[in-house]
Image (cartoon, rainbow, N blue to C red):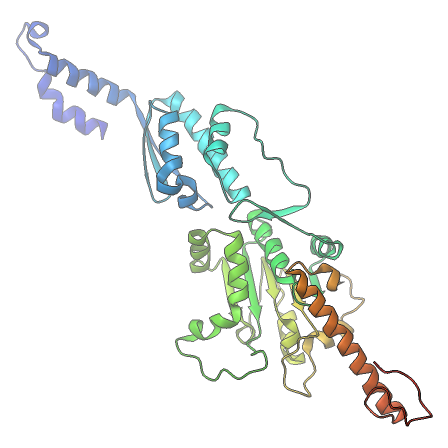
Length: 381
Protein backbone atom coordinates (compact mmCIF):
# COMPACT_ATOMS: atom_id res chain seq x y z
CA UNK A 1 0.00 0.00 0.00
CA UNK A 2 2.88 2.35 0.78
CA UNK A 3 4.32 1.74 -2.71
CA UNK A 4 0.98 2.70 -4.25
CA UNK A 5 0.93 6.02 -2.41
CA UNK A 6 4.54 6.69 -3.46
CA UNK A 7 3.78 6.01 -7.13
CA UNK A 8 0.61 8.11 -7.22
CA UNK A 9 2.16 11.15 -5.54
CA UNK A 10 5.64 11.09 -7.08
CA UNK A 11 4.52 13.58 -9.76
CA UNK A 12 3.94 16.17 -7.06
CA UNK A 13 7.69 16.29 -6.45
CA UNK A 14 8.43 17.47 -9.99
CA UNK A 15 9.23 21.20 -10.09
CA UNK A 16 11.50 23.58 -11.98
CA UNK A 17 15.32 23.53 -11.61
CA UNK A 18 14.80 25.90 -8.69
CA UNK A 19 12.49 23.36 -7.00
CA UNK A 20 12.97 24.18 -3.33
CA UNK A 21 12.11 27.82 -3.92
CA UNK A 22 8.87 26.94 -5.65
CA UNK A 23 7.46 24.18 -3.39
CA UNK A 24 4.54 25.67 -1.48
CA UNK A 25 3.58 24.77 2.09
CA UNK A 26 0.89 22.33 0.97
CA UNK A 27 3.36 20.27 -1.02
CA UNK A 28 5.86 20.29 1.86
CA UNK A 29 3.14 18.95 4.17
CA UNK A 30 2.25 16.23 1.68
CA UNK A 31 5.90 15.20 1.29
CA UNK A 32 6.43 15.04 5.04
CA UNK A 33 3.23 13.02 5.46
CA UNK A 34 4.41 10.59 2.79
CA UNK A 35 7.82 10.17 4.45
CA UNK A 36 6.20 9.51 7.84
CA UNK A 37 3.79 7.02 6.24
CA UNK A 38 6.67 5.11 4.71
CA UNK A 39 8.43 4.89 8.09
CA UNK A 40 5.37 3.56 9.98
CA UNK A 41 4.47 -0.14 10.07
CA UNK A 42 1.09 -1.83 10.20
CA UNK A 43 0.13 -4.97 12.12
CA UNK A 44 -3.03 -7.03 12.54
CA UNK A 45 -3.61 -8.51 16.01
CA UNK A 46 -6.10 -11.39 16.24
CA UNK A 47 -7.99 -11.82 19.52
CA UNK A 48 -8.09 -15.60 20.00
CA UNK A 49 -10.07 -17.61 22.59
CA UNK A 50 -11.92 -14.59 23.98
CA UNK A 51 -15.16 -12.70 23.38
CA UNK A 52 -14.33 -9.47 21.46
CA UNK A 53 -17.33 -7.73 23.05
CA UNK A 54 -15.83 -8.28 26.52
CA UNK A 55 -12.44 -7.08 25.27
CA UNK A 56 -13.73 -3.86 23.66
CA UNK A 57 -16.08 -3.08 26.56
CA UNK A 58 -19.56 -1.58 26.62
CA UNK A 59 -19.76 1.13 23.96
CA UNK A 60 -16.13 0.32 23.04
CA UNK A 61 -15.05 1.91 26.34
CA UNK A 62 -12.00 -0.34 26.73
CA UNK A 63 -10.92 0.29 23.13
CA UNK A 64 -11.26 4.06 23.55
CA UNK A 65 -9.17 3.85 26.71
CA UNK A 66 -6.43 1.98 24.85
CA UNK A 67 -6.45 4.64 22.14
CA UNK A 68 -5.99 7.36 24.75
CA UNK A 69 -3.14 5.41 26.39
CA UNK A 70 -1.39 5.00 23.02
CA UNK A 71 -2.03 8.34 21.26
CA UNK A 72 0.82 7.87 18.75
CA UNK A 73 -0.75 4.72 17.34
CA UNK A 74 -3.65 4.53 14.94
CA UNK A 75 -5.92 1.76 16.23
CA UNK A 76 -8.89 0.35 14.31
CA UNK A 77 -10.84 -2.69 15.52
CA UNK A 78 -13.31 -4.89 13.66
CA UNK A 79 -14.69 -8.19 14.91
CA UNK A 80 -11.76 -10.03 16.55
CA UNK A 81 -9.04 -8.21 14.58
CA UNK A 82 -7.25 -5.05 15.73
CA UNK A 83 -5.41 -3.11 13.01
CA UNK A 84 -2.61 -0.93 14.37
CA UNK A 85 -0.44 1.63 12.54
CA UNK A 86 2.60 3.21 14.19
CA UNK A 87 6.32 3.01 14.85
CA UNK A 88 7.89 -0.32 15.74
CA UNK A 89 8.80 0.49 19.36
CA UNK A 90 5.29 1.67 20.32
CA UNK A 91 3.80 -1.25 18.41
CA UNK A 92 5.83 -3.77 20.40
CA UNK A 93 4.67 -2.32 23.73
CA UNK A 94 1.07 -2.26 22.54
CA UNK A 95 1.21 -5.91 21.44
CA UNK A 96 2.57 -7.01 24.82
CA UNK A 97 -0.23 -5.19 26.63
CA UNK A 98 -2.91 -6.64 24.35
CA UNK A 99 -1.62 -10.15 25.05
CA UNK A 100 -1.67 -9.49 28.82
CA UNK A 101 -5.25 -8.22 28.60
CA UNK A 102 -6.24 -11.26 26.51
CA UNK A 103 -4.74 -13.68 29.08
CA UNK A 104 -6.54 -11.81 31.87
CA UNK A 105 -9.84 -12.25 30.04
CA UNK A 106 -9.23 -15.95 29.42
CA UNK A 107 -8.57 -16.51 33.11
CA UNK A 108 -11.15 -14.25 34.76
CA UNK A 109 -13.81 -14.00 32.00
CA UNK A 110 -14.12 -10.28 32.77
CA UNK A 111 -12.03 -7.11 32.76
CA UNK A 112 -12.60 -3.48 33.74
CA UNK A 113 -10.85 -0.19 33.03
CA UNK A 114 -8.88 -0.38 36.28
CA UNK A 115 -7.45 -3.77 35.23
CA UNK A 116 -6.45 -2.36 31.83
CA UNK A 117 -4.77 0.65 33.45
CA UNK A 118 -2.84 -1.63 35.83
CA UNK A 119 -1.61 -3.75 32.90
CA UNK A 120 -0.58 -0.81 30.69
CA UNK A 121 1.10 1.11 33.54
CA UNK A 122 2.90 -2.04 34.67
CA UNK A 123 1.37 -2.02 38.12
CA UNK A 124 0.93 -5.26 40.04
CA UNK A 125 -2.55 -6.68 39.66
CA UNK A 126 -4.75 -6.31 42.69
CA UNK A 127 -6.39 -9.65 41.86
CA UNK A 128 -4.59 -12.61 43.35
CA UNK A 129 -5.49 -16.19 42.47
CA UNK A 130 -7.95 -17.60 44.99
CA UNK A 131 -6.95 -20.93 46.47
CA UNK A 132 -8.92 -23.84 45.05
CA UNK A 133 -10.52 -21.86 42.19
CA UNK A 134 -11.57 -24.02 39.24
CA UNK A 135 -12.58 -21.23 36.84
CA UNK A 136 -14.15 -17.76 36.99
CA UNK A 137 -17.69 -17.07 35.81
CA UNK A 138 -18.58 -14.37 33.27
CA UNK A 139 -18.86 -11.80 36.08
CA UNK A 140 -15.32 -12.65 37.21
CA UNK A 141 -16.39 -14.42 40.40
CA UNK A 142 -14.47 -17.59 41.37
CA UNK A 143 -16.06 -21.04 41.09
CA UNK A 144 -14.69 -23.60 43.54
CA UNK A 145 -15.74 -26.43 45.81
CA UNK A 146 -17.70 -25.00 48.74
CA UNK A 147 -18.05 -28.15 50.86
CA UNK A 148 -15.84 -31.07 51.82
CA UNK A 149 -17.60 -33.48 49.47
CA UNK A 150 -17.49 -30.99 46.59
CA UNK A 151 -13.75 -30.75 47.14
CA UNK A 152 -13.62 -34.54 46.96
CA UNK A 153 -15.19 -34.35 43.47
CA UNK A 154 -12.37 -32.05 42.32
CA UNK A 155 -9.70 -34.33 43.80
CA UNK A 156 -11.33 -37.44 42.32
CA UNK A 157 -11.46 -35.83 38.87
CA UNK A 158 -7.77 -34.94 39.02
CA UNK A 159 -6.74 -38.47 40.06
CA UNK A 160 -9.17 -40.67 38.08
CA UNK A 161 -10.51 -41.00 34.55
CA UNK A 162 -14.09 -41.76 35.60
CA UNK A 163 -16.00 -40.19 38.49
CA UNK A 164 -19.50 -40.98 39.77
CA UNK A 165 -21.11 -38.23 41.85
CA UNK A 166 -24.31 -39.23 43.62
CA UNK A 167 -26.36 -36.95 45.83
CA UNK A 168 -29.60 -35.01 46.31
CA UNK A 169 -30.74 -31.97 44.35
CA UNK A 170 -28.85 -28.73 44.85
CA UNK A 171 -25.48 -30.22 45.79
CA UNK A 172 -23.74 -28.72 42.73
CA UNK A 173 -23.08 -31.95 40.85
CA UNK A 174 -23.81 -30.59 37.36
CA UNK A 175 -22.39 -27.11 37.92
CA UNK A 176 -19.12 -28.36 39.40
CA UNK A 177 -18.72 -31.00 36.68
CA UNK A 178 -19.10 -28.42 33.91
CA UNK A 179 -16.65 -26.09 35.69
CA UNK A 180 -14.06 -28.90 35.69
CA UNK A 181 -14.72 -29.54 31.99
CA UNK A 182 -14.36 -25.84 31.10
CA UNK A 183 -11.08 -25.70 33.03
CA UNK A 184 -9.77 -28.71 31.07
CA UNK A 185 -10.67 -26.94 27.85
CA UNK A 186 -8.91 -23.74 28.92
CA UNK A 187 -5.84 -25.68 30.09
CA UNK A 188 -5.86 -27.52 26.73
CA UNK A 189 -5.83 -30.92 28.45
CA UNK A 190 -9.02 -31.68 26.48
CA UNK A 191 -10.06 -30.61 22.99
CA UNK A 192 -13.82 -30.73 23.52
CA UNK A 193 -16.63 -31.07 26.02
CA UNK A 194 -19.49 -33.52 25.45
CA UNK A 195 -22.60 -33.21 27.62
CA UNK A 196 -25.44 -35.70 27.66
CA UNK A 197 -28.52 -36.69 29.60
CA UNK A 198 -31.45 -39.04 29.04
CA UNK A 199 -34.61 -37.45 27.62
CA UNK A 200 -37.00 -38.52 30.38
CA UNK A 201 -39.90 -36.39 31.68
CA UNK A 202 -40.19 -35.81 35.42
CA UNK A 203 -43.40 -37.70 36.15
CA UNK A 204 -45.56 -36.33 33.32
CA UNK A 205 -46.03 -37.04 29.63
CA UNK A 206 -45.31 -34.01 27.45
CA UNK A 207 -46.31 -35.71 24.23
CA UNK A 208 -44.77 -34.75 20.89
CA UNK A 209 -42.80 -31.50 21.05
CA UNK A 210 -42.77 -29.10 18.05
CA UNK A 211 -39.73 -28.21 15.96
CA UNK A 212 -36.68 -30.01 14.60
CA UNK A 213 -34.56 -32.47 16.56
CA UNK A 214 -32.56 -29.75 18.37
CA UNK A 215 -35.73 -27.91 19.40
CA UNK A 216 -37.26 -31.16 20.69
CA UNK A 217 -34.33 -32.07 22.95
CA UNK A 218 -33.36 -28.56 24.11
CA UNK A 219 -35.88 -28.49 27.00
CA UNK A 220 -34.24 -31.58 28.51
CA UNK A 221 -30.76 -30.06 28.17
CA UNK A 222 -31.55 -26.56 29.49
CA UNK A 223 -29.76 -27.08 32.86
CA UNK A 224 -26.55 -27.76 30.94
CA UNK A 225 -27.00 -24.63 28.83
CA UNK A 226 -27.55 -22.59 32.01
CA UNK A 227 -24.31 -23.78 33.60
CA UNK A 228 -22.28 -23.23 30.42
CA UNK A 229 -23.75 -19.74 29.98
CA UNK A 230 -22.56 -18.81 33.46
CA UNK A 231 -18.94 -19.70 32.65
CA UNK A 232 -18.45 -18.83 28.98
CA UNK A 233 -19.49 -15.52 27.33
CA UNK A 234 -22.49 -15.91 25.02
CA UNK A 235 -20.69 -15.07 21.77
CA UNK A 236 -17.80 -17.42 22.55
CA UNK A 237 -20.17 -20.18 23.67
CA UNK A 238 -22.13 -19.94 20.43
CA UNK A 239 -18.90 -20.12 18.43
CA UNK A 240 -17.71 -23.18 20.38
CA UNK A 241 -21.01 -24.97 19.84
CA UNK A 242 -21.00 -24.20 16.11
CA UNK A 243 -17.48 -25.63 15.84
CA UNK A 244 -18.46 -28.69 17.94
CA UNK A 245 -15.88 -27.82 20.61
CA UNK A 246 -18.83 -28.10 22.99
CA UNK A 247 -21.39 -30.74 22.07
CA UNK A 248 -24.71 -31.31 23.81
CA UNK A 249 -26.49 -34.49 22.80
CA UNK A 250 -29.19 -36.81 24.16
CA UNK A 251 -28.04 -40.20 25.35
CA UNK A 252 -29.92 -41.98 22.56
CA UNK A 253 -27.44 -40.69 19.94
CA UNK A 254 -24.29 -41.96 21.70
CA UNK A 255 -24.29 -45.51 20.38
CA UNK A 256 -21.42 -46.25 17.99
CA UNK A 257 -19.33 -43.22 18.94
CA UNK A 258 -15.78 -43.24 20.34
CA UNK A 259 -15.12 -40.14 22.42
CA UNK A 260 -11.43 -39.16 22.35
CA UNK A 261 -9.63 -36.14 23.86
CA UNK A 262 -12.71 -34.97 25.72
CA UNK A 263 -14.39 -34.42 29.04
CA UNK A 264 -17.73 -36.26 28.86
CA UNK A 265 -20.49 -35.56 31.37
CA UNK A 266 -23.63 -37.64 31.82
CA UNK A 267 -26.25 -35.79 33.87
CA UNK A 268 -29.39 -37.24 35.48
CA UNK A 269 -27.85 -40.71 35.20
CA UNK A 270 -30.47 -42.13 37.58
CA UNK A 271 -32.89 -42.05 34.63
CA UNK A 272 -30.78 -44.32 32.45
CA UNK A 273 -31.59 -47.99 32.03
CA UNK A 274 -28.93 -50.64 32.62
CA UNK A 275 -28.43 -51.02 28.86
CA UNK A 276 -28.12 -47.24 28.34
CA UNK A 277 -25.49 -46.59 31.00
CA UNK A 278 -23.53 -49.64 29.88
CA UNK A 279 -23.53 -48.28 26.34
CA UNK A 280 -22.52 -44.79 27.53
CA UNK A 281 -19.60 -45.91 29.72
CA UNK A 282 -18.12 -47.95 26.87
CA UNK A 283 -17.92 -44.86 24.60
CA UNK A 284 -14.79 -43.76 26.49
CA UNK A 285 -11.80 -43.20 24.20
CA UNK A 286 -8.16 -42.18 24.59
CA UNK A 287 -7.31 -39.15 26.75
CA UNK A 288 -10.92 -38.87 27.89
CA UNK A 289 -12.43 -38.30 31.31
CA UNK A 290 -16.03 -39.04 32.29
CA UNK A 291 -18.22 -37.63 35.05
CA UNK A 292 -21.53 -39.37 35.79
CA UNK A 293 -24.01 -37.45 37.96
CA UNK A 294 -27.24 -38.68 39.49
CA UNK A 295 -29.74 -38.53 42.33
CA UNK A 296 -31.17 -41.92 43.25
CA UNK A 297 -34.06 -40.29 45.12
CA UNK A 298 -35.44 -38.81 41.87
CA UNK A 299 -35.76 -41.73 39.48
CA UNK A 300 -38.35 -41.04 36.75
CA UNK A 301 -38.19 -44.43 35.02
CA UNK A 302 -41.36 -46.51 34.68
CA UNK A 303 -42.15 -48.70 37.69
CA UNK A 304 -40.27 -51.99 37.66
CA UNK A 305 -37.27 -50.77 35.63
CA UNK A 306 -34.02 -50.64 37.63
CA UNK A 307 -31.96 -47.47 37.43
CA UNK A 308 -28.79 -47.92 35.39
CA UNK A 309 -26.92 -45.71 37.86
CA UNK A 310 -27.94 -47.86 40.83
CA UNK A 311 -26.82 -50.96 38.97
CA UNK A 312 -23.48 -49.43 37.89
CA UNK A 313 -22.61 -48.37 41.44
CA UNK A 314 -22.80 -52.01 42.54
CA UNK A 315 -21.02 -53.53 39.55
CA UNK A 316 -18.12 -51.07 39.13
CA UNK A 317 -17.12 -50.66 42.77
CA UNK A 318 -13.47 -51.45 43.38
CA UNK A 319 -12.24 -50.91 39.79
CA UNK A 320 -9.02 -48.89 39.66
CA UNK A 321 -9.41 -45.54 37.90
CA UNK A 322 -13.09 -45.17 38.84
CA UNK A 323 -13.99 -42.96 41.83
CA UNK A 324 -17.31 -42.61 43.67
CA UNK A 325 -18.27 -39.46 45.58
CA UNK A 326 -21.47 -39.41 47.64
CA UNK A 327 -23.01 -36.09 48.65
CA UNK A 328 -25.73 -35.40 51.22
CA UNK A 329 -27.89 -32.61 52.62
CA UNK A 330 -24.85 -30.80 54.06
CA UNK A 331 -23.58 -30.18 50.53
CA UNK A 332 -26.70 -28.37 49.28
CA UNK A 333 -25.79 -24.87 48.07
CA UNK A 334 -29.24 -23.65 47.01
CA UNK A 335 -31.81 -21.86 49.20
CA UNK A 336 -31.68 -23.02 52.83
CA UNK A 337 -35.23 -24.38 52.50
CA UNK A 338 -34.00 -26.90 49.94
CA UNK A 339 -31.89 -28.53 52.64
CA UNK A 340 -34.90 -28.80 54.94
CA UNK A 341 -37.07 -30.21 52.14
CA UNK A 342 -34.47 -32.81 51.12
CA UNK A 343 -33.96 -33.90 54.73
CA UNK A 344 -37.71 -34.18 55.31
CA UNK A 345 -38.20 -36.36 52.23
CA UNK A 346 -35.22 -38.53 53.13
CA UNK A 347 -36.68 -39.10 56.58
CA UNK A 348 -40.04 -39.94 55.01
CA UNK A 349 -38.46 -42.37 52.52
CA UNK A 350 -36.49 -44.11 55.28
CA UNK A 351 -39.59 -44.43 57.44
CA UNK A 352 -41.67 -45.83 54.58
CA UNK A 353 -38.95 -48.32 53.67
CA UNK A 354 -38.76 -49.55 57.26
CA UNK A 355 -42.52 -50.03 57.41
CA UNK A 356 -42.56 -51.89 54.09
CA UNK A 357 -39.69 -54.13 55.17
CA UNK A 358 -41.41 -54.95 58.43
CA UNK A 359 -44.71 -55.62 56.64
CA UNK A 360 -42.99 -58.08 54.35
CA UNK A 361 -40.90 -59.94 56.89
CA UNK A 362 -43.14 -59.86 59.98
CA UNK A 363 -46.56 -59.51 58.36
CA UNK A 364 -47.35 -56.39 60.42
CA UNK A 365 -49.86 -53.73 59.36
CA UNK A 366 -48.40 -50.90 57.24
CA UNK A 367 -49.40 -48.13 59.64
CA UNK A 368 -48.10 -46.59 62.84
CA UNK A 369 -49.39 -46.96 66.39
CA UNK A 370 -51.68 -50.02 66.23
CA UNK A 371 -52.79 -50.14 69.86
CA UNK A 372 -54.69 -53.41 69.33
CA UNK A 373 -51.55 -55.26 68.22
CA UNK A 374 -50.15 -56.60 71.50
CA UNK A 375 -47.40 -58.66 69.89
CA UNK A 376 -45.57 -55.75 68.27
CA UNK A 377 -45.30 -52.38 70.00
CA UNK A 378 -42.62 -51.02 67.65
CA UNK A 379 -43.14 -47.45 66.40
CA UNK A 380 -42.45 -47.64 62.67
CA UNK A 381 -42.52 -43.85 62.19
